[in-house]
Length: 235
Ligand code: URA
Image 1 (spheres, protein in one colour):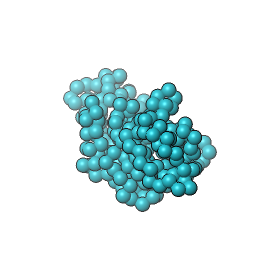
Image 2 (cartoon, helix red, strand yellow; image 1 turned 135 degrees about the vertical axis):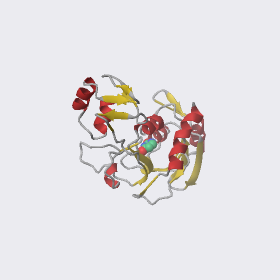
Image 3 (cartoon, helix red, strand yellow; image 1 turned 90 degrees about the vertical axis):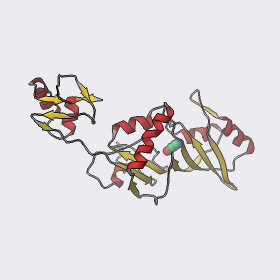
Image 4 (cartoon, protein in one colour; image 1 turned 90 degrees about the horizontal axis):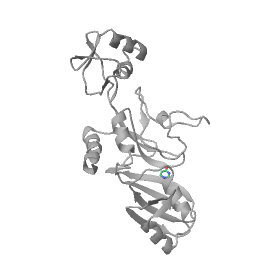
């Protein structure tokens, strides 16, 4: 839910300030009811301003296979390339959660704040799978420690799955986790004495990296519904 003046301003009709004035002048209706200042509404509600219904910003959902060297932020003080540079759109999209500058793999970008809030909320249980290349071989005892869970900042991170893909000079470990703390995979391995030298997110819930690195595609309606449905399963 957002303040009505914010929704009006986001529609591009007028500024937030002007929208407040229109509300005070009694020229704004939400679902047939005269709006008052401070009233909240959602994208689902009908908002009429001076007899005209505001246009809702069409929601878009992109799935990007992020390459290395992009920052998951809308601006960067070091002027590094930002993730939205990779997507050709005139919508104001932003990444859902974060991947580190050098991490590759799946990330959703959208202008749907509701989905963003759901997917990044701590109670939201969506499994993410990463392929981590380590700086050395991994010891069997550390694989067990990893499976049992590693404490990071006083909270245990227990992977849902750990699979060592190769263990020659360097180990490659496939690891799935539910939580979404920043740098969590690197921190988990660091706690066991390993440095992650390459990190790729290969799965995000049911979504898999079926697109080449640096490329993206739109999520279809069914996929978006499925992402929303995760939330109801976890309630
Ligand atoms: N964990 C990390 O350490 N880095 C990422 O980019 C994602 C998860």
